[in-house]
Image (cartoon, rainbow, N blue to C red; front, side, top):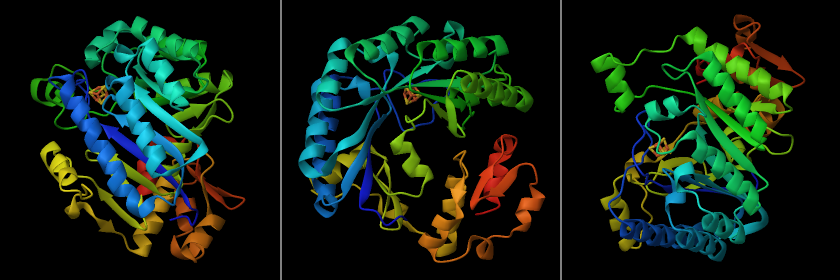
Length: 383
Ligand code: SF4
């Protein structure tokens, strides 16, 4: 772990309008707004409880994710931000992000977010093709996506991310290129591009593997979509800085960079993960347990989830996450953190084995563009 006094905070809001067919995140529908208000009160209590040991840390990023945080009223989001500022040392220039679903955005919410110091919004667009949005089970159409971007911009957001997705059954290259083009046309400061993964327990998994009503996308098509998009982004002035992320210069996500740079973060809310003081752990993921812990005035951590890795395992995590960055990982920083030479710990022959896919230059180890296609295979070599 790094030795700075900085800390990132993640807040999980697990509610959604409805479950998307591909989603395996910890999220679910809700029956009435009182549940959202009760959950907000619990999160605020958790902020108070967890801050007791960590209030001295300088919080330079806050990320309110989910689920769909924009489902909460602007007042509830305001209360969460106020509690964070009251209990933690939130820096003046902290990056504060909220995730929003286009179906849940209003002018009032945007204005309140900005008034509370939220300075970055991440909109889950996924596609600018209505048939694809319908297939995914999204609760919005392409016009909602456009309007939500325009609303955010009009309200005064200068830093906007759009999430888009490829490798979706039935999505043609033309549809994907159109989505990328529309995205570039809007000119957000940041674009995240994800390849659809079919996860067990989702509606898509059932459709693909039990019912046979969904065709898997060929690996070669998925990769072609990825490289086509990266090339279009590059031509439009976006910098590819992480496997799945591009930004205009200076707009890399500070919060996400923490995950890839071995920095500490505290997760608050249902099922949220933390990396603190060399330990990794998660909050309980059953609402009944989470609320009971808060009512008992204790941190809602799932005791069974606490993991303390060995030094060698931590080194592996450092490489695994660091290789996600296009700039790669810095072996000098590795030496400072782990007090050991990188190539005394890891076999230099891996460079030969993955010649053309993995490179070492000027103290940095990084994946080439080709290497990103087999990133998991290469990263696993270091675990
Ligand atoms: S909006 Fe996001 S978190 Fe909610 S169900 Fe859809 S993909 Fe999952």
